Image (cartoon, rainbow over all chains, first blue to last red; front, side, top):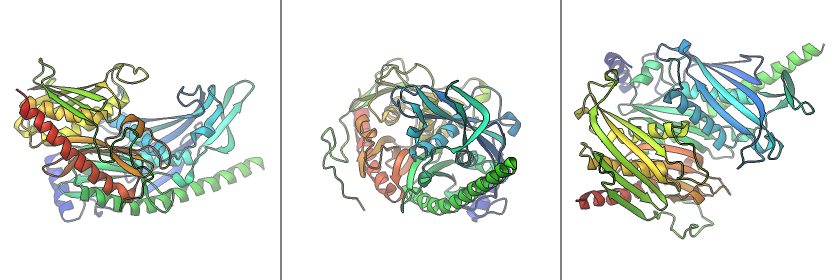
Length: 284
Length: 235
């Protein structure tokens, strides 16, 4: 729901290449990353993008593999649009908005081959690790999909296996190993959504901006070698796009990928350093 | 620039831009206000339109324009391993993206307060089901006499290693050697030159996306002709 006057203001601003909060069309809000939302989770992170706030947690478990992938672990992604985070969210079955975010985030992680699922196999056809990537909103001010994908990526990057007792066939939850998840770091996929209002494109909208837009295209990009690879795309909303507009998004997403990749790498490195320090202090 | 391909032909003998045989039929569900069947090779979709009708509950109504509501469903026996009947996360998402694909061509501002129910069912699946569903639905909308701006057509673009293909079948969709399996469904409005559905999962080099979109555009133009022909010939 958006007031006509808001939409009019958003549109007037963007037609002058401006935005209500003073940003340029392709300018990202400030991103704040904090790890360790829950010390019970195998990995967890809080990501703030402007006033948008999402948290992600990784929980591991052991399960029987699917019959068509007997030597591969599994991953499930879920999204909760918590009523505490917005007057627009309600309790009940996941809405299509939540389902779509979870599925698109999942697709980027999966299709980029970022996770080495075969290395999650403990016993072929019998026992594999399952990864649950659970996302939740703490405050909604737009651009939830990009914020969620970023949080999911950071949580995976910093997650550690829990201790598994082979004899008891039991996971000792709360006790962690030094072993990280089997990730193909060179395949890291990052998510960028382009929104359309009138005939203008913008990124990272606030809630009032997002509600004023007519549609969007999400790009999930990785860079396994010198060339960028698109691993997932999703068009949302009733807007239509020309091939030229999609081309603009491809070029912008290459630039954004570079910036976002630096941010993610630095954050993950920072976590590893702190983690080592904490472990060392504990030993002493 | 097209990359050199190790393939000269596709597993079923088609050329890279060749579509599977298409069968389009209007009026397959007599009870509906409009209906159509669209078969693309082994993929068969039927669509039925009920509406425009008053949208209930009333608070869901939009006093300014009508709403398109899509229900995409795969029959449990349409695939290899039986799928559980009913709504899944996948079918919910496909329904939503299909709504977004179809809504721009319907003159919804002419139909305030109403809903147009679009029921898409997949009888037999061999890749490209959401595209076949959109193709069937577009014809069914026209058959129902719903005011439309133009025809809409959809196609699944895919890849075998580095070779970009139009209208992939299941074998091609799952072809995982080389660059890996890739599926890019798109819907295209041939008159205005706009894309109204675009999804991708797999691996598509950013610099080759344009090539893939152009291939899809040409395929959709061909499909639009078949859809229009079926509508014209329907008595």
